[in-house]
Image (cartoon, rainbow, N blue to C red; front, side, top):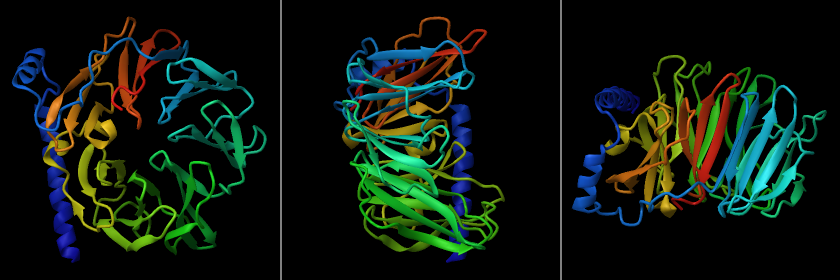
Length: 392
């Protein structure tokens, strides 16, 4: 079995090599003439209704005059926007809650800088220190009208948090319960911030410190924890375990990849049908199907997109692909694919007004398209603009 697994891993990495070659040979995107030809021939099967109409002005814009002020943005399922501004020089901090149309709902000055902002179907989960002088992490639930509700959840030892399809949050804990031992478990919170079950055990072992671990989910009733299971936690072997949030673990941990070079690192991205894509660097290594232990090859159309991040759109009827870097300078576009993998076309953003050094895109879970623009200049100014629910 281990020999078969080694052959599979070798095949996957050969695929990654071919993926890199394909990207180097492909210019990416469609020319205007090719785009016109595609429209004339009609959209491929499964593409109906995926592409938006002409893009109007953005729903909202914001930014900062210099790079000392950092900005984070999350969008809930109703299109409400939560912005966090933090200035490293003046040590000032604020949160701004905007409605779906971009209007200001409320500004918060009395909360310290938050560790995680997790968007829900309605509102947000905020995880951060109790105060500037007390680093104890606490949870607040923010409603769409700006009401903050503190929750008595024990966030000690939490190493990562992800949304649970807008219906709560999954909290990953990787820690040492005693000298020479490590343990990984998961907490499930509902959308009201209540813990729905006792901590769910994932894995444990001997060692001076816990391994690196990641949790991912693309549907509310399944999730996966991926962790470094090599003896010295050097990245040479990675294992995983499926579980039902708020329920039970499904099967024992299983080896995903092994006999890898020391320092190998993997991460997961949500796909459709509960599947999770496995990546190393930019390459798509494979995909994992809920409650199955086999690492399957990535679909061919996805394998040749190593420079893109992928997000489900239109309530699971397709994918939006955006470059995870700013290689295209200030000319941003998003490629739309049907769930079958058929390429449907591109969404090209309106030109950015000068000055512009570079820009990049992000697609949120509710279909909001966000563009970050570096304006350059002496102080590193930047701006942010977004189109709420463009691909919802």
